Image (cartoon, chains in turn yellow, purple, blue, orange):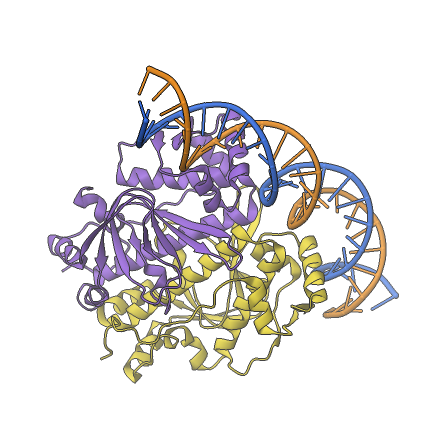
Length: 245
Length: 245
DNA sequence: CGACTTCTTGAGGAGACTCAAGGGTGGTGG
DNA sequence: CCACCACCCTTGAGTCTCCTCAAGAAGTCG
């Protein structure tokens, strides 16, 4: 289990929270559940969308196309909310799979309503979190549409690094991810075979090394230059944010 | 100018609104502004993110990579909110360009705060709209990662068709879009040259025809089958939505 | 030790790109 | 009314990235 800090890190990335707000966030949490590595948490096209807050472990969110092709949308880290994109739809958009052993708690829709009705500041923060997710998707779309394999892998690894470091500021430039090269391929829209060749090239160029899920970044700056995406800096307590109570 | 209906169509897609709510939405609207075709409305990496509501005309949102490559994120239609993704950031993420003559009104951030503090139901609807945008991005990411050119174009045209029809239920299977094939290329991550060849193939297969911005779809069902994305159905007044006042 | 899973390597092929030239179409001005 | 220009689209040829198929190597776990 992660510390409480991590579980609400997505909220506190934008503003500091009062004690009453921390309490309100805790009340969001419904039944606690555990899954083993490889378990399916939610199935695509299911007619009962549900919300979860990931407490510990990694999960993946994937979409399957009619032809059998599989696109992995993102990997979720502790503190991420799962299931939000399916909220406006009658059926779930993605399949959630546990990449490691996982603990999460369901978030009853009722709690969402309470948030909007009674905790406008927290609702606004949730809104910001969603916009941030949108930015992440936009960056991935840009990279997928306009760059070849090497830069796609670089962008993915940079995004992962930044997110992991938010949960653990002590993190080093070498870290473990519970992914296979096939997973990386599903994330960036390429085959496992080609991902393998890409990593060899990246290692040769001394940009990134990969060894059975252990990533090492020799130089963050060079990797950022290479990938070409602008750095994203989050706002802190923007003026329009409702006051806490 | 479009009817008031269109301007708030994104909200009324999820729930019916009371008169007081319609009024509150009207109060969101700040200064009205007009732009000519080709004008830049907002520049990427600007340090003053702003919100707009598009009243009439089409705009495009693009991201430019370090290397000069350009990815078009989406085209905005009347009723769409512009600038939301930049809200969690200190700098704007995208460049907004007018594809036609355009009318829009700015949405002061102050109004956003009022929404969350005083109109939880409208705030929740805005939240839903954002999740819907996320779904659109997810579908585009999936198509970009996992399909070749023909299906990418098909998916784009289907998305456009659905969105246009929401604004104008009378719309036919043949319609005009103020885009060039180079724009289509920027949207799906391909070159103008290849887009041209793709359209020739699609016309040969009797799936879509393009002639100087006029699109014709011989059969919606066949096009949907071909593109392979599941149809997305929106919820109507979900249980958790706060009550109106 | 054997059975998996993960990664690597090779060869041939398809989709998309670049560069470059040419053809339409619509608008403007003489 | 025609000449010209700008913009958009098309076509061809050569190249690169990435894919598929297939086989094999290297870890990992019982």
